[in-house]
Amino acid sequence: MSVAVEPQLGQELTVVPLDGVTGKWDAIVSRAQDSTFCHLIGWRDILSDVLGAECLYWVATGLDGEWQGILPLARVKSRIFGHYLMSLPFLNYGGPLGSAAARRQLAQHAVAAARRSGVDLLELRTRDAGDLGLPVSTRKITVLRELPSSVEELSKSFPSKLRSQIRRPIKEGLTVRFGLDQREPFYEVFAEAMRDLGTPVLPRAWFDRIAATFPDLVTFGVVYRGDQPLAGGCGFLWHSEFEMTWAGALRQSRTVAANMLLYSSFMEQMIARGVRAFNFGRCTPGGGTHHFKQQWGGADVPLPWCQYAAGGVKAPPSPDDRAFSWGPKLWRHLPLSIANLLGPRVVRFLP
Image (tube, rainbow, N blue to C red; front, side):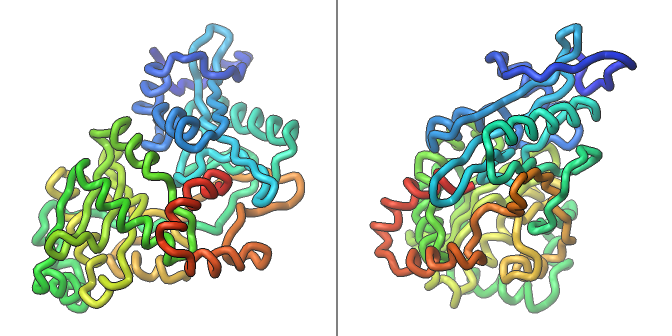
């Protein structure tokens, strides 16, 4: 099967819904340039089963029926927050893959679908905007750091202040555990951290399904003081890059810098696996999370997400928007049990 081959002059492309040949989809993902773990077909069932999202997975084919490109999309819609087509929600990547012509055709097809259904915003979370002919958002970036071949080199690359912050939790007796069996304590920490940030948490079932669907790609890690989890992270390995997709730490763990041990331990784990790059995940330029990620010695990398919005909407709802700023302020004061009950019901309407 040829993958992402530029169509010959005069060859037409047709965009059709995925007809269930999921193995063929993932074969393209594994070979296509700029593919990510976010493109894998497994996310379709996770999004639809756990969050109830309408998923639109499209294939661009030539006249001979050969697949030339793919595009995963999901619809997120509510009366309060708006109507969006995202590729993909809750993830950092997922734009069209394949030949240049197929990518353009898929993007145009997505724009046409957005127009027909009157969405507030279509966002293709591309890693390379290329020549899709769409406006590119600059509101989010990631921080990417190359990993050395040994833990010793990694430690030497850190400034003395950072090394001191990493040693502090070790001196306090904190330990780190990795494995799929860590998703429960990870979620316990993550849910409380999200409440403290004023953000509805993803359902527990989201992470259970991730562990079941991508057991060889996902890594859960948790920092403990004794048997008490203090900080946790969840991320994905794709080819030679690891992305820390979700992470959080309890407020009371700040004095012992549990989050510093979490990140340094994840990097050490990835070095042991031969990973060459550590992706810290998306953040807002200039924000506190951005500064935290910069201190590890990485470089800022733009996230060139392509957009279409007939009405001029440039981003999904954000705490920075006056219309929604009341939400996080209220959410932070909810009892944890209430936040954990309501969060999964609310988050499905947030892209």
